[in-house]
Length: 116
Image (tube, rainbow, N blue to C red; front, side, top):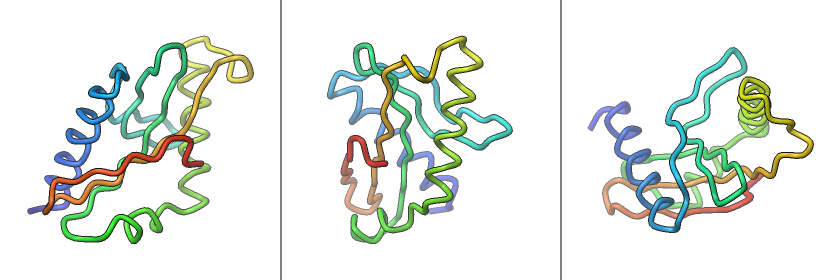
């Protein structure tokens, strides 16, 4: 399975998991000059910016360890840009940053709310 296929599978699986838990999908693969956000969802009144980590055949802990401080910062900046672009005030808008780790070979996903 190619890296792109693994990533697409993981994002689809993560989206389904989040929707099963009542979140509403807004956009996938949001890109701006600051970076990329895999999924943007709504959890009632809260904006949820989701990083999806997909691996073909690894443990969750190993997958989650691969999220760096720099990557978290890029995602935060991208979220700020998204809010600005949609005329939402980042200081008064409820939001959180989640991570979904997907192991493709076992089709398992682990969702961490407020991961960073």
